[in-house]
Structure formats: structure tokens, C-alpha cells
Image (cartoon, rainbow, N blue to C red; front, top):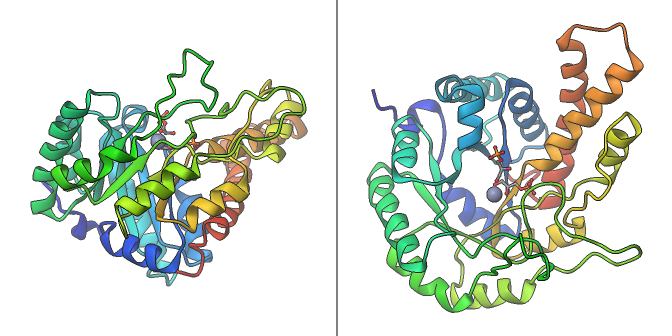
Length: 323
Ligand code: G3H
Ligand code: 13P
Ligand code: ZN
């Protein structure tokens, strides 16, 4: 039986983005796959009074079971309310790749859906995205589309096809599809290995010139930045200290994330930084407490650090205090 997102205490992203645009900050899009991540996200956003977009990927649905994950969300909303908080909470399908997947999410209570047709030829991306919008909008579910393929910033890396968003396409795409927000490619990529730096080489700068041209062509329109984890060195170092091997992990410097948040970018997606914190803390805890075998001990330890990291992200994005 279909359930509408309003029955789960959720909101879509329309109002969130209007406020973020006016206030020159970005709302975090935080991915979760399990209870501890969800608890850390909600308690962090309640504590720092930030709006939040919870994100579930196709992989998360497969890992945790789509029904279980979706039923955890109203529990998380209720938990926030019991903490005395009224922060706006949206639920987004991250990187939806088919109409059927999107439909299933809309019907089960998601308030925003991303349809990622960025790998398709342009006209196919337009057609698929428009089909999604035509299904979502009558149900008041907002839609994120994507133009340009996320990839490494170094063009000689042949396996990572570099395909920045072409600003000349954005008005046509938004006009013909009716999307509510648009993810663009300006040099970020997913995961913990975003740039290949030679020894001593400085971090590259994201293509803010493309972002500015998109803003000029779509005044006041909400832009989304994927692949925005900073791959915090503190946690990479802990992982490596306790038996890990993440030697060349590099992310987006925090000053560039802040710069993006102050622009028309209204939503910033962060997943990898949470994964790194969780892994670092679990490795550290188990190494220091070799006799421990209660998962609540090491997961609880990781959850506490995760909450702190999410609060500092909300501060970086400027969303803290804006709920
Ligand atoms: O965009 C990718 C997100 O980090 C989700 O990753 O597909 O491994 O769940 P995933
Ligand atoms: P990161 O891998 O940089 O955290 O990006 C996450 C993301 O874009 C989810 O859609
Ligand atoms: Zn993404």
C-alpha cells in the first residue's frame, strides 16, 4: 500500500532550498545504511539545529533491506521530535537509475528522488528525468536531476572519464524536465580517492567557473554538489595507524566545500567521510580493547565520533542553526 511522505513526518526539499539559497548555505545530504549512521545523523542535526536530507542509495536498499530501511525513517523522525526538535527532515533516493526504482521510492514515502541519467545520451536523460518528474510532482515529491558525469579532475586518468557539466545545456534541461534541483559535475568524484596528487602538489581547485556560469543561466535555481567528502586526514591516519591501507586517499578541501555552500549549491552530499569515521573508530577501539566483543561497545564508540563529525559538517555548510 502506498504511503505519502507527509504521513512519515517528512518534508520535500522545496522550502529547504528556498531558505538555503536566501541564507547562502547548503543543506547536507547524508547517506545511511544502518541504525548507527542514522542515529548519528539525526542526533547531530538536532543538536546543531540543522535541516537534513537523509539519503538512501540503491546499494543501501539492497544491503539493509528496502522495507527495513524505510521503516527506520519514521522512527528517526519520532526520535528527533522526542528530543524536542522540529528540524525539517527529507528522505531522498540517492542516484536512482530507473523509473521503476524511483516509483517504488515515491510510493513508499520518499519526499525527494534523484534520477541520475547523467551517463545517458542527453535526449535520453531528458526523457527519463521528465518521466520521473511527471510521476513525482502530482505527489508533491521533489526531483533532483544530473547533468555531467562525476569523475576525477585529472584528464589523463582514462578510466575516469572527465565530463564536466556543459552550462549551455542547463536551461534546456531544467526547462524541459521540470526538475527541482540539478546536480552538476565540477571536478568532484565519489569515494575516498578524488584526486591523484604527485608529492608536494597542491589540491586542485574545483571548476567554480562552471558553477558560476550555471548560476548566471539559472538564477536562483538550487544546485547540488555530489562527491563532497573532504576525506578527513585525521580519520585516514587513524585507519592507517590501526592496520588499514588508504595511502592515497584525498578529498575536497574544506574551504572549497564552504565556498560551494555559499553559492547556488543548496545541497551537498557527504557519504565517504562518515564511512571513514566509522572504520577509523572501530579499528581503533578493537585494537585498544582486544578482549571486547560486544558490538554495542565499538559501534557506540564510532557513533559518538560520527555525530561530532556531522555537527562539524553542518557548521561548515552553514546549515547549523538554520532549522
Ligand atoms: O553516491 C554514492 C553514495 O556514496 C552511495 O554509495 O552506492 O555504495 O551506497 P553506495
Ligand atoms: P562522497 O563519496 O564524496 O561522500 O560523495 C557522496 C555522494 O555524492 C552521494 O551521492
Ligand atoms: Zn553522489
